[in-house]
Image 1 (cartoon, rainbow, N blue to C red):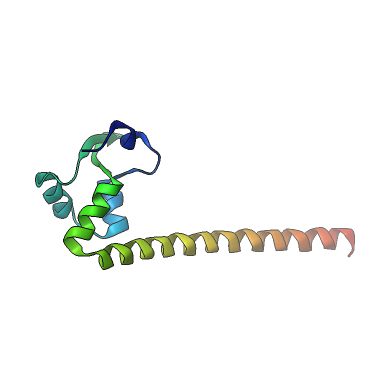
Image 2 (image 1 turned 45 degrees about the vertical axis):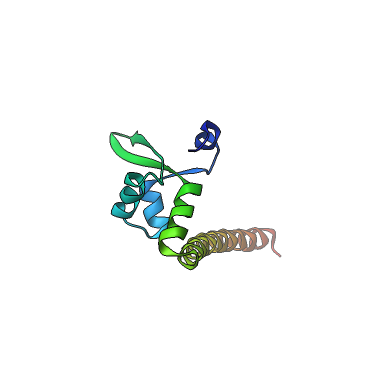
Length: 111
């Protein structure tokens, strides 16, 4: 059982939808963990759409036990790679805009 503080700590929880996207698990996998008593959850709703809120630490331990430590590491690395790639693309776009602005300012100054 998790203590109350873990439920309120930033990044310690995630929704079932996020868990499926980040770790590549199915809804049935998550529900089986809840039925087995290995995953705690809380109900939530956003704009009337229900979801399950799970503890990340418990979910990762459950995934490692059921699917293997290699699967867990691979899925977390893939998720981090997607985030890094997205950030690089965002920074490249911002860099291009700044370079274009620099050229425009230099042209305006006659440089």
